[in-house]
Length: 254
Image (cartoon, rainbow, N blue to C red; front, side, top):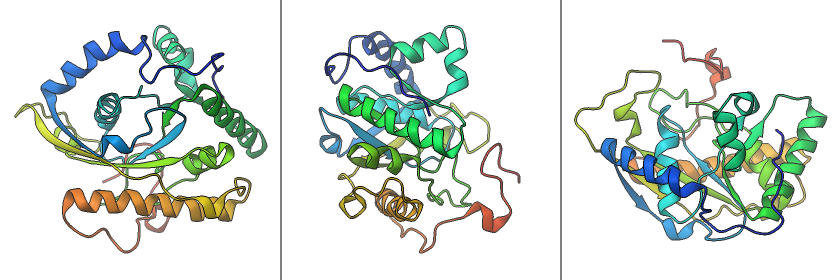
């Protein structure tokens, strides 16, 4: 994970560079989805934050980006470091302040996380991090076991973690499935929750045990939000791919 260079002063919630992109993306997404957003006021209108959504479809980022834009902030994601070397796309990622993530050793990863967290805090930017790290492997699309990246980033800089849940995008693009554009404007519900209380883990960004426990707290918050959207209880135990012989990267085998 490598940080981007901070600006000299705090930026506006929705910088001018995002408006041309929004003018294209928001109407296009509106043709596909009818995004219903609840809890927009819970996303900080200024200052740094880590937004942690669930992940059920490859098209989720479009839904999340539109929801964050409508909530008054610029949608910035963690992105693979290799994408920053891609012509055109790499330039867009850098200009819009996306944060690159690179594979690295434990020591260098921890150092990069601290630098990225400090960058977010200084520039007062928010970032969207999928705590599951990939599409959920849970057969019923509930949030699976989370990874520690989101809370590690937040705890390193005292940045709040805001949980988010969305439900409906999988009807347009099923997990590892084919795109379904008919009927248009399928309903997608998005809810933003209160910042997760991680005060019990303050100063514990270097403790793997504490990071795992804090991640569980965040995943609980996301699961409860999704439970409300689905109107059914979340599983008592989260899906762990390792217990089922599943890889956590790449396509999910049938």
